[in-house]
Image 1 (spheres, rainbow, N blue to C red):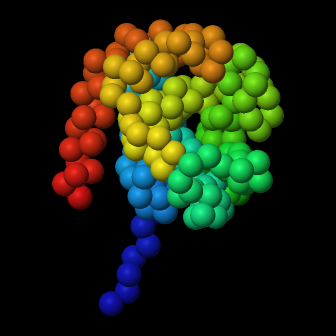
Image 2: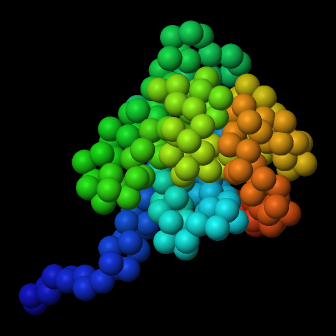
Amino acid sequence: MKIRPIRPNSAHFVTTVLHQFAESLGFAIDAKDPYTSMHSEEVAEVSHALALSMGLSPNEADIIHVAGHLHDIGKIGVPDAVLKKQGSLSPSEWRAMRRHPRAGADILRPVAALKSLGVVDMVLHHHERYDGTGYPDGLAGAQIPLGARIIAVADSVSAMLQNRPYRPSKNFEAARKEVLRCSGTQFDPRVVQAFEGVAAAIEGMVDVLSAKEKDV
């Protein structure tokens, strides 16, 4: 029997396949570290909610959602001994961890669609800080892509809610207060304001994702 090739005839088809591929890659990196199970999905969902809250279009929010799934893909190259280490990282281990945004961007850059949509730059810069003290390039303020500024908040919220080898998880209220405290230093105040406006909805969202994780 001859198999007929699929001939997508719409941008929607391409976007759907791209998103499904990004989701699968996000699950792959999360599977590498049991402490961050479902982290990429959580970051993607929270980033999407924040983008819509800030008035971005559904299409723009969907692109940021894809970048959220892929933000940690560079950790594939980080040794397990570093990812799973109990306690503080040594200077050399910290340098290895800090390479993951650039490694992730390098992995994704050959995919022309991800590059043209800005996903590669969002992945590259999601650990920049609003005050310019982040990495890898020390960008500040509006120099940081908006999607990366959004993912930075979503990533930090998700990380705080999860147990890590070096510290226990926080509850949502403690995570919310930490985000507010870091407004203008680590985080873009506009993104923090959007987060505060939809915090209750985000708390409900992460509760649903947590329950989903337990059912897996």
